[in-house]
Length: 135
Length: 135
DNA sequence: CTTGACCTTCCAGCGACGGGAAGGTGTAAA
DNA sequence: TTTACACCTTCCCGTCGCTGGAAGGTCAAG
Image (cartoon, rainbow over all chains, first blue to last red; front, side, top):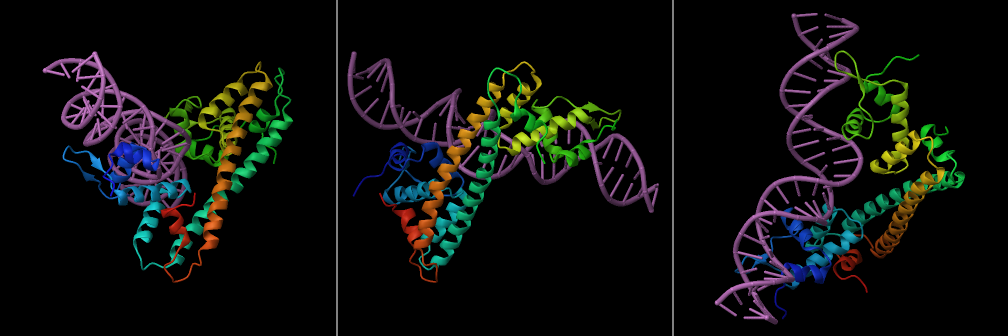
């Protein structure tokens, strides 16, 4: 069995910055870490696994709040998979909403940029649009 | 000539919340508003136009900082349109980076969600992925 | 005269950390 | 042994772009 890791080692193992690990603990997302005699936080296999779970969920764009819910579902053997799926679906919808909003933005910006000759002249359709947008 | 508007009226005209207008003034993005005798802020045509410019730029996703630069370029008759175009292009790149990141997320989430039967059983590939992501 | 809708300033909080100070600890080399 | 250095601790402030709320002034209508 591997020995416990300090916060710096846990950070390297999981990719979660030490500051962020402390923050997660402080806000109650993860349980209080064990402590060594000198007061250093210690992370065993389970704690590392938990941190990796959190990291993966954050990387998938779940809010810290949602990660809390996911952790609760993870820990609860008797939950229905439909609960998890619903949470994931709501998250997917948020992502899709963001994407379509950004797509509109991108198209507008492309059009604007293409319409600007971008040389030393002062005339600039981009600023004109900002000042008096069409319709 | 239209008379000056109070902050609430300006807010309705421009779609920028009154709180936000004060915030923009406080942070120096827009100049200090004129004041009536009773201390109320007053907004004339020019100020309204400025606020609309800011609103449009924010809606296009420019950061408040970038909006400051755009305002400076707008006010400067002798700037080259290429400066504006460069700023817009950098912004477009940021949007596109965000979009492609979100597209990856969306695909991953879709796959995960599709793999989860989402019924009353506890078995859930979404949680399994979070706990032990493939490669 | 009172109600209610405005307006003013100021202070605090959101999410999700990151920076940096001030100080304790652990180890390895000079 | 001392000293250097990397690590750990707690604490508080700053980020971005607002938003909410408290405490108070102002104004028009009923």
